[in-house]
Length: 515
Ligand code: GDP
Image 1 (cartoon, helix red, strand yellow):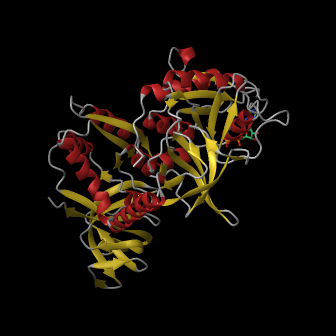
Image 2 (image 1 turned 90 degrees about the vertical axis):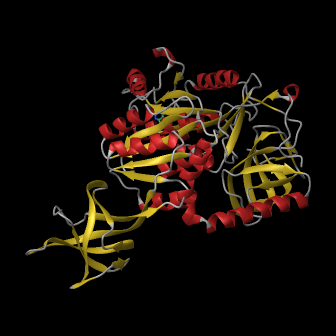
């Protein structure tokens, strides 16, 4: 096939950088993207690009071009990475000067760092009376981002998206970063890239915004995008204008696909219909197999990782740690990082407080990381996503056990013999005090099943307050072995009585890991 062609150095030409804007809500990501749109010199007096798709490109007076992905925030960035696309060359981190570093700022930093994409800090809202850029700088420092004025390597610019001030400095910083990255592509080859967004249009059928990262995409090309394929019937640029071809890093909308591909999937131009159909069918089959293997997917990850380590193919184990308190998160991070050795490094992508969310799962998926839940649970959505995506979540309540397992893993030794299998959740609705028995929790099974003798974790506001065993399970007066979702039951816990209405009981059992 013609896909997968190697480029010779002499064929490579400079290409525009692709930029994603991230930051906390309301810090001005959208405003900055809108303001930057107006810096385009080719769109005349009217003030910028109006007709736009999921990405746009500005041409500067110097004729240099910069491409912006038009979905601000790290969710899109990371979910695209999770599907295999890494289109972003530079992240612009927007921090409002009057508000400073906020939770989503920190998340954005972690996501950019995990992807190893360089950042430029845009300190926004400088026009506001409460603006305090120095505070932003020192807050960033505490999160490992050292800006240039503080002796670091991260470029920073002070801007006002509202007043359109400092935009030229943002662009300059991007171009400088692009120069450092030495971004190049061979325009004289069939295109390869990623789908940025897609939709079904009533009149035009499947419409996908794509960014070619290599080569030139042309009208008439036959493309495969994820499991979909088709002949490119029309190419439209970010102003909705029909064009014949798109050079590297130029966002375009394409028409002609047989179906709507997922955002983040790769696309490639192939030589003919047959080849396209073949790849598409192969991928569809893979997808079906993956769906069938759902249950085993999650448990496969650790074993696969171990096998790669044993084969000397994996040089790093990435971990994402969520704990009930910051002290534990930091202690675990410090402990496991020390387990790095010459062959395999342990890399903690993030160690923070709180339950495991979908965003954590996406990040773990994108970075091939294990998720460590220390005295915290995963939200239902996060757990389902983890199962679908084959991301492993491991639950612990003792730090040395985390250290033990990680050590075994990086040393390429045996995988843990037992693994936790999630059973279900029950919610405590009422607590009864029964003579000679103690406290019994009148509960309702909200998900899965609960089983007598199973492992339990008692969660109060998402935090584990007790770990133990379900010693008694009753339906009305009778002892039963298990109770399924939608039924009420009475629970008691061996030697534990601090039960409250509203507590959630997470049930699991240990299963043998097949050798
Ligand atoms: P996003 O949630 O990060 O996309 O933030 P938006 O771009 O929607 O901006 C949030 C609010 O901040 C809006 O009311 C904007 O008008 C305002 N805003 C954005 N940039 C600036 C700025 O530079 N100065 C001032 N004063 N307000 C701004």
